Figure 1: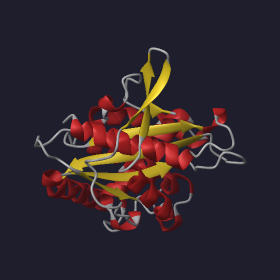
Figure 2 (figure 1 turned 30 degrees about the vertical axis):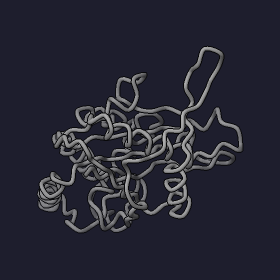
Figure 3 (figure 1 turned 45 degrees about the vertical axis):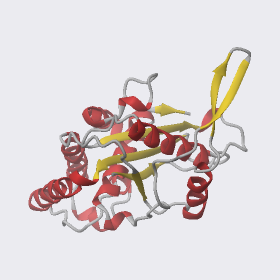
Length: 255
């Protein structure tokens, strides 16, 4: 079974939103590799504790570490950035991870565009399709399934969306005389989403870091641009799911 841990960067608002983009990131891992990757992340966190004083159980929220560090203010800002860079490199070394990224450019959307629903529909469909075509790294079984572990979000809306997609999921296809639709119902994702508080999940924190770095690669804040942090997303290239989009060299799905 494949597990996908999901977090976001940016917000889903259109009118009056402070962010132009909404990034939704899913970090995919096979259940048989879960313990090994957890052990590796724990080892990384212990190194960060020895080197910078970041306690093993403290939450790593990438955006907050740069802009609103709270209790992590005791760690110098440059060192917090070094931790972020090191975590990106550590994740990139775990070749049984696979990352699906969806980006919504809200600048060209009308006011009734549902950013949350559209981004999640695409992410779930890509997760389903990649399982179906056996394109994730890891064990290749003919009957693999997937489970979803998002950070706390609009829990009720996401639960309803997944249930709906199991019954009705129209996907456009090109036909000779226009656009038609296929009902590609979700069949390989089991159970409702299993919501997590990110402070209790290293894997959700990893998805958060990737989403943050992707957003910063598109629209970096002044500090990240000054420190070349807008280039850190490229470190993750070895684990990006290129199958998610054939039109983007890093597999990013743009909406």
